[in-house]
Structures are given as C-alpha cells and as structure tokens.
Image 1 (cartoon, rainbow, N blue to C red):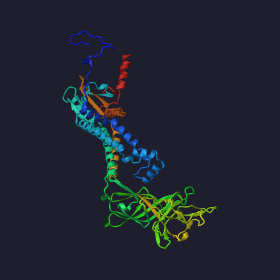
Image 2: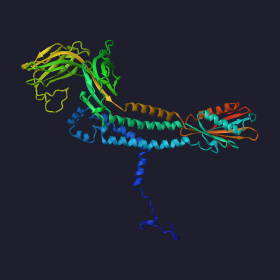
Image 3: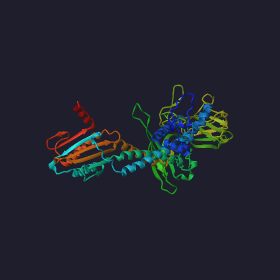
Image 4: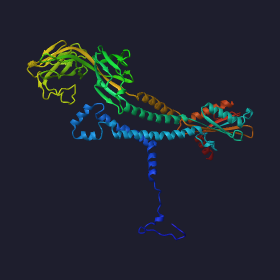
Length: 571
C-alpha cells in the first residue's frame, strides 16, 4: 500500500501491521444494539420461529398434570416421583400456561407480530395510493406479451386506442393511469391484486387479535365444576362450586347471579342393536334456570356439546351417574347423615364406586366404601356384578369402618376416597359379619351397636363444567378473519399490465401489451388471453389469436415462444 508517495513495503509474519492499515469499524453503540435487536425481533422469520416455539412450549401442558385443572393429580405425581417431581415443579411444568417462560414467549410473539404488521401496512397503504409503475421500454421482455393490429379503415388512432385500452383494463378491475395521452406513443399502466397483500395483513392482524382474545380470557375469565343431583339447585357463587379456577385478574363481582336447578336427567340406551346393546345414545338434563333472583324461571335442556348460556357463562354437560339416597344413624339412633351420595362410574354398565362418610356419628365416626350396581346379577361364585346401565335391580355393596375419619385436622380430603388407616373395620367380605348388601328400601344394623344404614332411593346426577370466557367471541371473529385473509392471500394475484399504442405510416394502429406478476402466478397466461379477447371485442378486430386473415391480426406471444422463434431464425 502506498502512502504519500512512499515505496511499497513488503510485509511478513514478523512485521506487525500498522494501525493506519487496519479497517476501523464503526461502533454499534447502545442505541444501535437496540435497533438491531428490534429489527431481528420484528422480522417475519422471528415471528414464525416464535409461533413454532409457542406450540412446542405448550406440549408439556398435555404431558404433565396441571394445577389449574387437576391439582390432586399433581400432588399424586409429586408423591410418586420424589426425585424428579420437585425438579419439574421448579421448571413450572405443572403450571405451564402461567409460567414466566411461557408468558415471555407469548409476549415476544405478540410484539414480533405487531412489529411485522404495522410497517408492512404502512408500505402497502402507500402502494395503493401510488400510481402504477412507468411503462417499460420493451414490453416484449415481459413474461406475457401480445400485439394487436387495428386496420386503417377502423378510424381508431393511437390516442383513441389507449383510452379504450384503459377502459377495458378498468372494467377488469385494474387501477389504471394513462401516460402521454396526446403524444405519438401513448401508453397506459395498470395494476390490480392489492387484496392479496390486504389478505396477508388481515391474516397476521387476526393472529394478534387471537392472542389478545386468549389473554383477555386468561385475565378475566374463570372456570369451575359442580356435581348436581336431581332436585338440587346451584347458585353462581364461589361457595357453590366444587372446584373453581379464577383468571389472573378475576373479581368475585364478575360472577353473574344466575341459578340452575336439575329437575330430571334421562339417558337413552341402545336396546335394539346386538353389537351395541346397552350403550348410551342420548343424554338430556332438564333444567330450571334464572338469570337473576328477580328474573322469571325458564325450562332449558342441556345436552352433550349443546351448552346452556346464562349471563355470559356457559354450562357444559361433562359427566353423569347415579346417586343412591342413604340414611346413616349412629349408635344413639340419631341421624348422622342423610341424602344422595354421588357414585363414580367405572365401566359401561355404570358399576360405580361409592364412599359414604358420617363424621357426626357418635360415639365413633362412621365410614362406608363399596360399589353400586344399577342392575345386579350374581355369578356362580356368589359375586355380584353389574350387567346393565339402567336401574333394573339396584344394589349397594358396602364395607363399614369406624374411628377418626381425619376430617377435623384441617387437612383437605378427597370426598371420593376413604383413608382406612387408623380405622377399625366392622363389615367386610372376609369378616364373619360379611359385607353389607342393600336393595332400595332395605336397611342394615351395624355390628357392636355402632348404628345402621338404609338405602332409601335412587337419583341421577350430572357433572357440570361452568366456564366464563369473555374472549371466546373475539377468538371466533378473529379466527374467521384469519381464514378469510389466508384465502385472499392464496387466491388473489398481484398483476401489472402495460399497453402501448402507436400510428403506423400506412394508417394502421399498432398496439402491444405485456403482463407481469408479482411472484408466481400460474393464471397469468389465461389473463393474457382474456385481455386479448377483451381488446379485440372492444375494437371489433376480426380474426383469432395468432392468425392473420389479411385485414387485421391479433397475435399473443409469450416471452418463451419469442425466444424460441428468434433462435430458429438465427439458425
């Protein structure tokens, strides 16, 4: 390298480079780093990557039990996995959708989409208002090219022809601009297909709307479950729920003061088909509902996949079963428990597990565990089993216990299980007293004078999933808009057309046109033929495309065909 007329200096590995020879790069700086990070975040590639990452991050929510929906399963998992359980809990894998890392991905995706859509919307808005691009000098270089010769006796000059071409293009949905209308070589530029980019923007904007709607539901929505026995009434208050999951910004004042009473629940079973005999065909819950304490009562029917809506809250039918009505008396003859007991079905014949707890019994608390059979049959070994889901021969089979049920020490207990540790057994299949077998209307006196139990009747129950989702309607609207935007971006094409006219010395008017698509457009050739036909019809030029009848010719030639013809001539 020469400097100030000095001779070149040969460098070797032992000679360090001079500071003046090093390339000095500008420092990015703090603001420059922020600008670079913002551009990386708001790129479409980053948005797609974050969308994929969000889908992957949601996978643990389906692999591990979640506290928001099933806290008892989480407790069981932690107890069964004392080593890995706490580690997974530290990474919030049991609270995936409320974890900081999931929220971070969610917010980054939200920001990235906004950063992508807003600048593109501004650019597209300017493109819509701007004029079509200038007319190329050589239209023959465009992918679709054609010419039209208007006979001299037609009375159509170049200026008239260009205005006619503009009218034809406008009728075909193009935005047109006539250039040099009174000059020797007037032309018209046309463009259409802006809906393609509009659809793309609508699609991405709708994705933002879906994210906002989901966030609104997560912040202000709530969900809960309630088991309702025939004749019982549910009032929409916090104490009325069996389980309740509030949103992050939930307030109890959001609860609509509606009430629901289960009048009757009916199940229709298949009694005709041999292959599917006994399988349920239809579930119908007849409800008496009130939107508010002062509102008139209404009778509504709740079915599977057909929820009942009250005050913006939906009630879904998610389960059902039998609730035997029992009365438990203690050793003093006082009623310690009376009412329906929910049983949990375990098979298609509604063989159901049942637990009865009587903590008010004296002098010892009483507990019962066993199963309920809607239609009981006895096998050759003397064991009862369920044979049909309809209650043709209801039967309760129970074992009894007495002692401390553990309900008074403040530790939550599952109502559907009975911890027999520390309890003394009174009845059982392997004991001399045998198990308790009761039919409707039957009763049994417990050993040692501990009391009695009677089977008074049978009712049905339903399990309700109650959800208030304020963003549900927004999700539907934005999902439809996203689908429409996607269809528009797929089926509309951005096209540009230029038409140039000129007067030939012999009186003919020469017209040439070219078409160009933005991106791939497999229908551009068809559009070229349609435009050719429209121009021919406008000017009443006889003949067919590509044919010469002596009076007037219309020919359409693609760039590929022209190249082939030129090559043939050169040969």
